[in-house]
Amino acid sequence: MAGTGSGIVNGGDPRFASWLLDETGIDAQALGANALVRAVAQRAAVTIAGEKQAGIPPAWEAGSAVPGLVLDAYWLHLTSEAAERQALIDALVVPETWFFREREAFAALARLGTERLARRPGDVLRVLSVPCSSGEEPYSAAMALLDAGLAAEQFGIDAIDISSASIAAAKRGVYGRNAFRGDGLAFRERHFEATGDGWRVGMHVRAPVTFERANLFEWLAAHPVRYDFIFCRNVLIYFDRAAQDRAMNLLRACLADDGMIFVGPAETGLMMRHEMASAYIPLAFGFRLPNEEEGRRRAVLPGFSPSLASNFTPAPAALRALQTAPSLAMTSAASVTPSLLSQPSPNVSWMKHAIPAAPARAPRAPRAMTGAGVAAGPATAMPATPPRETLAKARSLADAGDLDGAHRLALQAAQDATQAAVPDADAWYLLGLIADAQGHPAEARDHYRKALYLEPAHYEALTHLAALLEVQGDSDGAHRLMRRARRAAPPAPDQGGADA
Image (tube, rainbow, N blue to C red; front, side, top):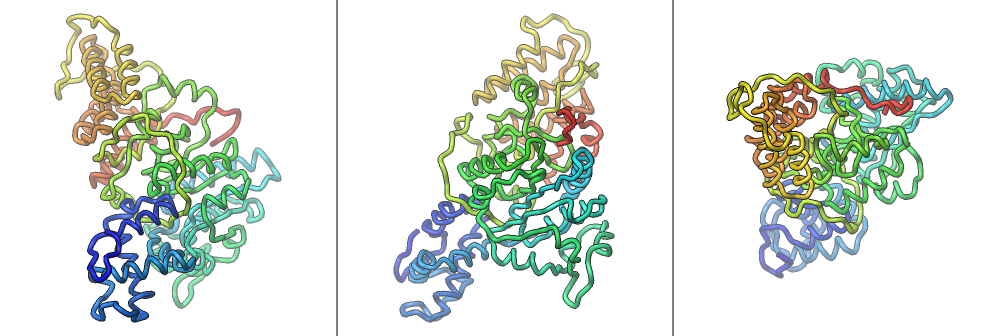
């Protein structure tokens, strides 16, 4: 509802949601229920009601329904003052991060960065953290590289964020207890000094890190630097489809040919939509540009197809279970190619976790399958069409958006393979993917478990089931599966000496 004079507005005003989308590419609903409404009310209380303008009800407070007069006055203030636009952005950005969050990514950075410099003596390792929030991520990257034996002059880290408050906090470099989580806190003794209000990061860690308040899109377009490693975690999921595509085009353009980009666990499906290849480092969520062989293989291997990936839009509730809102990068919405799937499923959330298919595996000796509607025992008759041919047709239908037809053929392939006494884990894995795309998580879970019964080291089924359990609140089960996935992960494809 737009401003209504003396009326009371209880819900969201579409003017502000439209402004946020145009200014940032962010869907207000992705920030959580009523986050924008609360932020507008907060800023209006400070800038409008706080000035006691004529016509504002004297009893109105920021915690109550916002009068239409207040919204109208605040809208004029917002659209005429750049400082207020920044203030509203800062009110929406509530950084929730800590040092070495998802530390597998920093372990990968240290290992791969050290190996890269060993191959290229004299080079300087370039790292980008965007958005960098209040500095924990870029400082963690610096500490990881220093602890790996690199000197500060051997690497440089650029860190940007749209929030002026976050950049100010990062430059100050003093952190409270909430920034240090978990048991592995020995780094604090090495790299921080205690102060009266927390711990200050040491100058040796600050030296290689450069902070700048900037618009992600404008900054990337204006800085044609090729980065060896990019951290862009837990922000792309808050953009609409157009902004995601624009961001990915810029990030790909500034990634070194053998570089790696680390994203959040909920953003792996987006990487697949943009044809990035997994680095196969469990829990690091690292991706790289694909080589020619992987591009050819993508169309024929079992796994998560780009067209399926483009269909998944995370539900706010599931996102809040996975991570809290990070600092937000700004853009204007751009045109976008429609998804290959005609209608997105409103219930699909966790598939943003999807891990791309592993390189082709050698033929397996299948296990006998019993229960859950899958018969065991010798074949009674050979199917008219080989199961693998049926499975390939099922994938084609899924890629074309015909999930019902894909399900029928994939189920037929699974049953035909069992009838032929060669049960196929890939068929059940594909059934799991289709069930996820249709918004049937319980069915998807059963299918993944069938795939793992037949092939306990099926990397894709392990990672997808782990992601599903994580969203459903079974963190222990998810971590157990990811430990298995770590052991089952295939070696990274050989790129002529490149690690990433």
